[in-house]
Image (cartoon, rainbow, N blue to C red):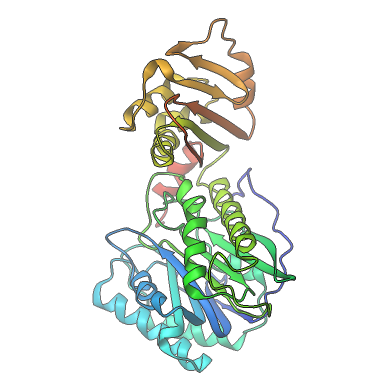
Length: 407
């Protein structure tokens, strides 16, 4: 797979105390790369998570949903190359058997093991390979670094995606590291394809969940590559408690606001990295909508623009066709008044008060569209609502990748 022209360098990531990683190769697909990731977590690690709202979720998603209310985790197992989704009783049995093997090798309760799988839908997870993957990865615990884990969770990704942030809590610097995979089937609804966040913060699970929900709302739920939501979308966040500060119990706890801001920043970095690796993407597009009746309306208008094949193909071709943006605003089903709308490409105002601006010069817009990062701004002129979302252009590369996906 050719590396995305929007790829970011892999960051220098710190170790997180209480986290050990092992990766292994099993032939879910005809490859030799590592595709099973096992993470051992310290006792009493707090866990929070969000999962797809798809009505056809994978057994791994259902397993996570059932165990998240417990709030504690000791292990995570991730399979790449087989999503195990829409696989009936056989898929459910395989997911639970693999999680049980993780509990066995880590010496913990099965309820403290979380799992995720990504790949082709409709193929049951082979139980023998899944169990062998656990055993091989367990034998290598502590030998894999963040880069190895990020490669191992990927499928059509063209570059490994990760980020780190930190916050001062109780005079202690708390670290956060996140890794994510995703390139296609990206229009998250509660999560992105697969994302895993690790911190040494000491925090009550309920507050950790509250922080993650807020962070996801402004990041993973604000990106789209192709308007398709996966059956396997999962984001899990783990806090090992190794930082040693006083436990954060509510947003009134000293340092809770700093940790929440760091988590939000981390999720935003990871989400935008997914868009940068959108299948066939050549341009990163930021869509900002202001002046909506409220923030929810602004987001829905922004996503209408970001998901429009006509807008995305125009950007791919460098065509300054702002009429397609008008179309996407109009079809969103949200309050909008034609004669109050203003549209910008980059720094150039192209339309205002229901018409093209007098003396409009397309040259600076065309120059902006020729770059790797494109900004579209729409002011609806109705109220205080604001939203920002990220997408990518739609090219022939997307068609080629997905037409040959199972080949």
